[in-house]
Length: 465
Ligand code: PMP
Image (tube, rainbow, N blue to C red):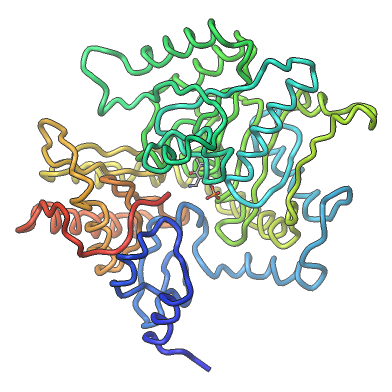
């Protein structure tokens, strides 16, 4: 029995609670209900097509309904869908682990699977903590994170999160983290170098407290949920060097930046950095199935090898660790990267659209455009000259993306920042068309008759990662 749009909409509102969504607004809206995907477009139950311009929250790589990826899942399904990785192995999990070790920075030799970005981060944190404890450094108890960091929504990941809107409410539940600034050149006070300011704070903290610090966690090169903030060149390298000097682990969260988004397979490669631990997810299965991994070095892994009686085992695992369907589709995904020379293509296409993007800077309410590869954030401002921010109640990002949706493009804002993170296979022509739609939506909302509507309740949605 096929349900009509109205029936689906009614049941959706009756039974579902959507993530990162103010349901009171949502209940008043006409919900978007996706039925299928073709290439880089999603198609709703009424037949309307949309560019998936945020890759279904930063996941999608080759578009939707890709023959090779579909086939990889069907082939695996003929064998087995899932068996546990607790003390036993499976074929695609082994093959994918080998491939991940091959494509990640030199020195990351061990793969621990999980199922989403937050779990990959949790594992990195617990592994790093236990690494020190297994070696007898029991004073090492806290982490360093950076302002506006986002590492997922579980309590451990929130403990190293630093976006007040999402994280401050849960403070009483969290373990302790030290927060240092993240360089944000567009909003940094004049006369001070944001990188030097951050490094000075980091070094002062390390001098005072390195003996109690497990590691520093960072979204390398691009801080995603904070608003696509791009680190100035050389910054990550210098952070890595400082941590080494003070014997503190470097944990990189490549959940958003990994698998080619920034124009390198992993963002760390921009600066030749090998972390001690790396969390990956999202693009690993090209947006097909929930799979994630935490990679680490022989050094970290070695600290867990001990006689059974010593109980130095990593007592952590999830039901779906190393799921065969996920691993099979990830392997096929990575084959397609090679076949399409995809990472180099991302770098080439990113450069090709730079001039198209920078035209938006001539718009009255576009303050800053940040781009690394195909991770793009367009910051809207109430006043270009003073960089005055739009008020939360203006819902400026929500309104722009709502108009974009009407024009056939899907994305989610991050506050006043419009996100463009398209599937990596998007062509320059398609990317140009997406930028055109986003530009039109920005103009209509920010330069239309009403630009400030504090308190107005018109559109659904809220910010989400
Ligand atoms: N880390 C980063 C840098 C992310 O951007 C995200 C999600 N946007 C996560 C972790 C959490 O990933 P997940 O939603 O798969 O748990």
